[in-house]
Structures are given as C-alpha cells and as structure tokens.
Length: 114
Image (spheres, rainbow, N blue to C red):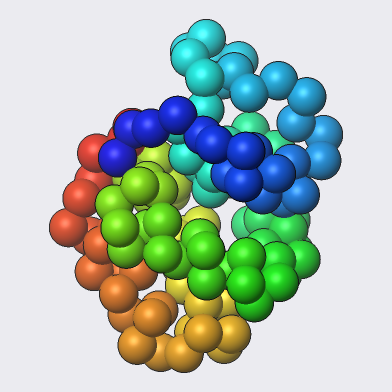
C-alpha cells in the first residue's frame, strides 16, 4: 500500500489537515504515503476532531478515498481501531452499509502499518 502521494492526494490531505505544511512524518522522517493516517495520528486532536475533518469531504472526495482504500492504495493499518470505527460510521451514513462493511473487512484483513 505504500505509495507516493499525487497532487490530488496532497490536495485532499491539506483539505483534511490545513495545518499540514510538510508532507514528512515528524516521528519517522519519511514522507506520508497515505491520507488518513497522518490526519488521524498527527493532526487530529481526538476522534471527534478526526470525524469533524472527515465530514468536510464532498461525496466525490469520499468516493475517491474509498476507491483508494478498496484498490489497496490507501492504508488503514496505521489507524487505531477506534478511529477506523469513526471513519466506518461516516462511510455507513454517507455511502451505505455495504461500503462501510468493506472498510472493516479491509482493515481487519491487513494490520500492516505502511
């Protein structure tokens, strides 16, 4: 799942975390390779803040993010389970239970943090 973020990914990351000025993880010194883990682990104050940030996504942006996850290009492995559940709840409400179920299956099938 590790990848180089493209322009669209960076735009989405900066929408979710406008305070993100550098694409490098402060703890590892490696460039971010996904969108959700840095938002959850570096920029969100707590789960409520994380959820609030995700609510700002348009339907098109949420679908893009879901496509990345389902295509194996966006990692959920670095997210704590409670953050995945918060994301899953938003997906269920906005994209349906089937999509939300896929997110949980992907998360539980791959626990590697990339």
